View 1 (cartoon, rainbow, N blue to C red):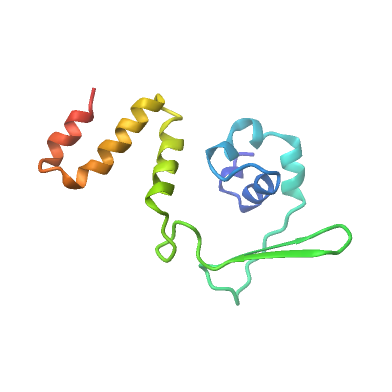
View 2: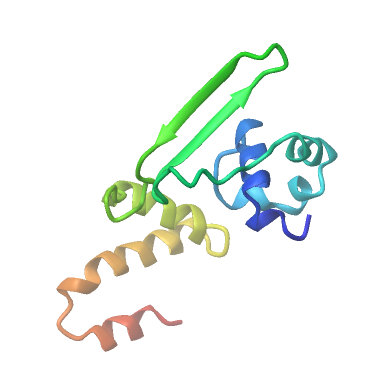
Amino acid sequence: PLEAPNSVLHWAAVTLMGVAPGLDAIEPALLSDPRVGAFRDAIAANIDPGTDTSTAVVRIILDDGTAHEARVSQARGSRERPMSDVELDEKFLSLAERALPAGQAQRLLTACRETPATADVGQHIGSLLP
C-alpha cells in the first residue's frame, strides 16, 4: 500500500474497477482495500522496447482467453495533446476544493486566469492573501 500511489499496477486496478483517475484513487481506504490489492496482484506490467515512450498500451486478457487492447499515442495533458482551458479549470477546481471552500477555489481560479492581464503581478498576488 505504501508504494501504491506510484504504482502503475495500482492505477490500472482502480481504473479498471471504475475509479476515476485522480486523488480519490489514492485515498487510504482504497490503498488498503483487499479487493484493490487482489486486483493489483492479478495485473502484470511490461515494458515493450519497441513502443515509443509517449505511447501506452493496455491489453486485458480474460479468463476465457479473450483479449482486449487499447492504445494511446499521446497522453492527455502532454505537449502534443494539451488539456483545454475548460479541462484545466475542472482539474484545478477538483484539486483546490479538497482544501478550500468551493467559492474560494473559484475566486482563486478567476484570479489565476486574470494574472496575465494584470499590470502589477505582485500586487495582484498580494490581493489574494488573507
